[in-house]
Image 1: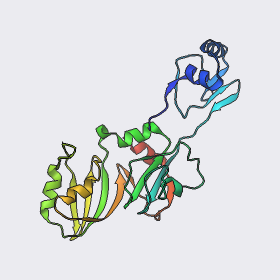
Image 2: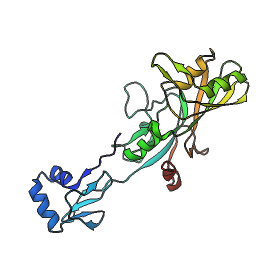
Image 3: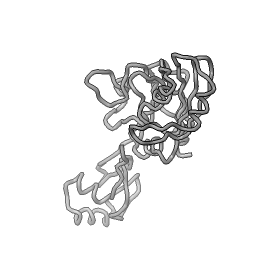
Image 4: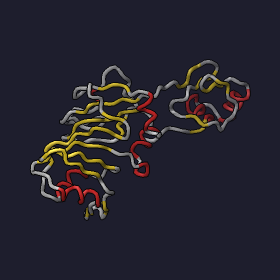
Length: 236
């Protein structure tokens, strides 16, 4: 979801259904405020979180929202679904109208899910060029060996998309347990990488995205607002 950034005059034209000439007169008369400051420039840029008023009439006052959810298995990372409960269905007491998921998990995966209404923030989180690390705990059906570590570090070629994955870090935590760190998110990437060893993934749990870690105090299905430090960590 992209941030809705645009010119102030166009926003007012659309909102009040008036001409750009009328908007210009409002601005020159000092009758328009953005974030409680009088604005006179027609080309002033605003976004979905700018507080905009004309003659003290409030036209927009959206508040940015950032949440972490402990996604359970069996819940889809979607805003709506015909068959399954969605991640947004688990959120209570908030306006979900413009909320979207930043970095999805599939139906049978669990762990950290980030939900926001801020398009620029989620773009910084999910854009491939930013290479934000994502850490997963993976339970396998068959025993692990050191061969896995080298193969993940080299990257793997996926013929269907004709791509080679970026190097990934695999740490063996137990005979059937690994921690995997990815800087990208190809379709079912972890399951497909272990599939090269014919080793089925029994459980996939996301621990962190960048510097944001799943709160250990959150039970599956529970959520909380991000702290200011967590929100800012994405831009660092």
